Image 1 (cartoon, rainbow, N blue to C red):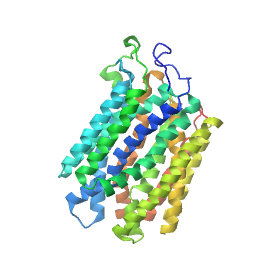
Image 2 (image 1 turned 60 degrees about the horizontal axis):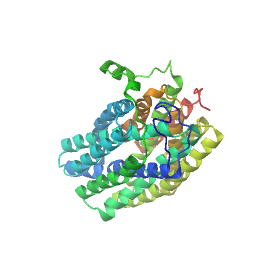
Image 3 (image 1 turned 90 degrees about the horizontal axis):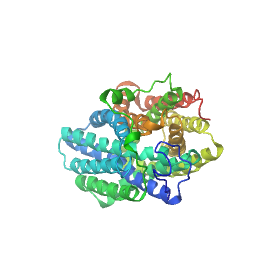
Image 4 (image 1 turned 90 degrees about the vertical axis):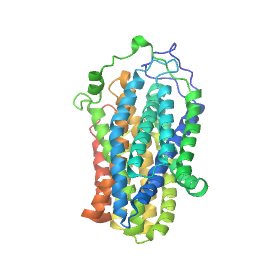
Length: 423
């Protein structure tokens, strides 16, 4: 376990001491709880809850309603991510800068999930999900910032891999728990809320956090806070290109995955029941490759000291997967595409996170700047279902949706080429 304290190094110093296996294990465990609590509702609980309120035979109605709710919550994320990061940058608590916000965000997230399980109106669902996502953003803005605070550059690919791999495990584990053990709307949400707290608390309790001296606290006014949300791409081009790449690649991934159930059911004609079973198999394939890729290639990028090449290859693999789904709409091909997508996205998640920590403009605002970077993950995930439903229903069908996913992934790969400060 790392023992860096305020007396040993300044709060804003670049970390040089390697974190231990114990630190990484607690970090990965916390992310398992986070991903399970966030992705299980998106994948299953929320769509089912929304459809129950609509009672419509047209699947597009459910996707549009879910997309509107997700989009409103996404707007909350645009504010919550950088705001929580900026406030954690300036926190002088004796427990450290990040831990109070990790704990506070987790509690807000858990309470909102419990309330969400009791909602019987679309308005109530929307409000509670917006609160839940705000808690998620607060928690993850601070948790992500611990990478820049405590992990040296030559370990960030590895550590980011242990942030990414639990995403795949959490998705499958959450789906199994709410379909086999904690059945029903309220019990499903309650299980996610409890597991979130149980898995995040050990990191908060055990891992030390650098304490910020009040004299070192950056000034905070409403004007400086708002101005801080804008980082000029002219002054900090590497940050701007990394942010653009992250938006595009995550949007491509979201286009390719957010309507996958409906593609299997209606695009391939499997029907909802068979499509749900096939989706679990596809998710398992995807999960295996995400885990392997995020851990193996994150660490390899540390050893080689290269990030951009891995991001380009990762985004290209996602594009290939989307093209397969567009050009050869077949269940067997979809299995191959799931493997390629997992390989590409797992690599991207770990290496791009490490890349993001190396292009931050100012050590004093790591939390806020990484919060802005994280918006590029949350917003595409929030708006993709609504945009995707429009593309499929009103424009060019599932084939056009997957072609759009491939195009955005390729553009995301090209966006890292101008980055100069990181290989």
